[in-house]
Image (cartoon, rainbow, N blue to C red):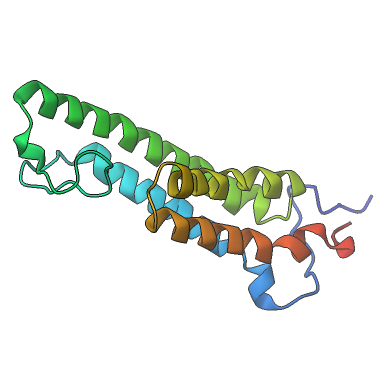
Length: 156
């Protein structure tokens, strides 16, 4: 019996297309790694009271230290929750990209679109433009580069 592409012990065959298409998974993987690093940074580092708040609809230009004690504590606690969520999401996305997407699994390609959609919502609905718009474009570009390798008839 000949092993198939879907068996874990085989390496996917070299598919047609330029090298940059076959390596399109690297862009979403970089995003997952950055999310993990930034999430750990937020989780592990306490907010500096002199830090100026940016990217907020209500509080731009204010410093974190302007808040009363309980508000500062609440901000720190909320930042830690968000940091743990961001780090965990980054690790999960990284595993999805490096594992099944790199092996050209179609379900993983569809599932990986969650990240560009999430960042698009942040950028255009919640107003975190332009950073989240850039991450949307980078992750979507990587997934679009993977289109031919993942859906190629040579995959079977």
